[in-house]
Length: 306
Length: 244
Ligand SMILES: Nc1ncnc2c1ncn2[C@@H]1O[C@H](COP(=O)(O)OP(=O)(O)OP(=O)(O)O)[C@@H](O)[C@H]1O
Ligand SMILES: [Mg+2]
Image (cartoon, rainbow over all chains, first blue to last red; front, side, top):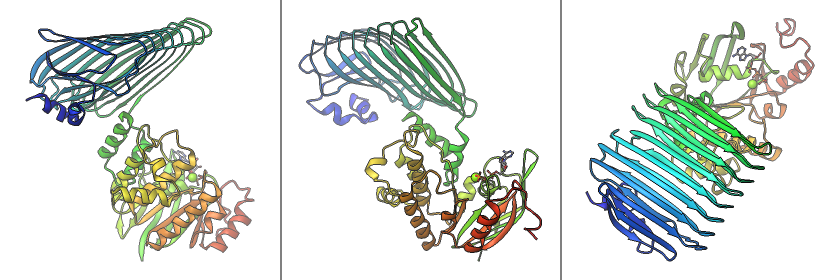
């Protein structure tokens, strides 16, 4: 199986064959394609089981086209370790779309360690979309530590809604300086005996720092989810919100552990969490339009995770 | 023709009789109205006909197109051709209007989805991609509910308070749709305590305290409703003198 089959599985053929599109493509521990653009420096080093990647966006550079990263594993059995060090210099802006594609995985472990630094006024948006096989033998263990400089803006969306989850154990932590804005969202669809563990932490350390942690999870069959959201606010006018929504069906179980910690009288953090089965009014409305109960639940979950 | 018949229908909720030996015959292709004061049991009757959770444990029977639907699930009833539009429609986080409507549509083409949105007075390009969630106003949500019932092309629609949360000009549109539905052969049951809505019907049933008080043409029922019910001080308990 070659890289094109990965692109195909992720519906990315045209993106990755576009000669103008900035991109970096990795199959297990080999860099198979790379296309840079002015102001974007990428340095890669292939290791025994993965790739170390350093990305730097030079001061003031605004990269208007999204940069696509593809982390694929075509093998049935493998361990892939990716180390990423991303540095966005002062005032620079970049939008990254990462595609993690494991279409044949039977026993694949994908480990990601990322350090992301945004200098003053930098902007970084990161969408990570996973496409897995229908086999549950995948473990995805992403860790990221993100530092936001003054007035920097960081947004990340993590999506695992295609194929089986297997095991996901993610741990993201963001430290926010004055005036910076952070939004972290995770959407995961668990079925069979999938295990979902999410740790999302934000520290609103600077004055007027703002942050939102959002988690949307569905667990069906015997899947289990555990969501730990922590948001601390330690400076005047720091404001944050934690939002966790988990739908459970069948024998699924879900735990939400939101921690909000406020260390300054002029800071403000709110949280809302809801765990439960599909709302009965929503369900009955769709059934009154002729959908079976299963189809109605599917549509409601698709909506939530869309 | 016999279309929907409620026969000696009794339903108790938490030990309280809410529907009390109701007998109503809804003719095919007509616009019917069910009127009555707050708490009369109008919504309960609609929920019971649709077979919602908690409204299944009835005495008596409900016949739809000649077949008893007692014990059938909501979706089985819907697939026989009936649907219900709620007074306060549900909201769905993240679910796009187009997917919500398409799910119930008989004809799932873009053209058909656009068509029902236009019929309820919503510009498709402005709404197709919006979510059916809190961001819609109450009136917009209600119109989308109506659009999804239209897309389903049912034989019977139960409308619980079609006017609630709807402004005057939109209400006219909704009345037009109700008449279009009738022209297409759909049977409509309007649940209301508004005289304006009542006037759209061919005939009406007045219920109070879960009992049928009177039935007949609109003039007769609206007069009764205005003169007797609006000033009624017996708190929903039918006066035996008025109900011989
Ligand atoms: N689950 C329940 N348990 C006990 N009583 C109930 C339940 N649901 C409804 N009722 C009661 O049944 C009666 C009829 O309610 P219903 O909602 O059908 O009235 P309605 O005619 O639709 O009134 P409105 O015009 O206010 O919508 C009310 O007195 C209500 O309080
Ligand atoms: Mg009611």
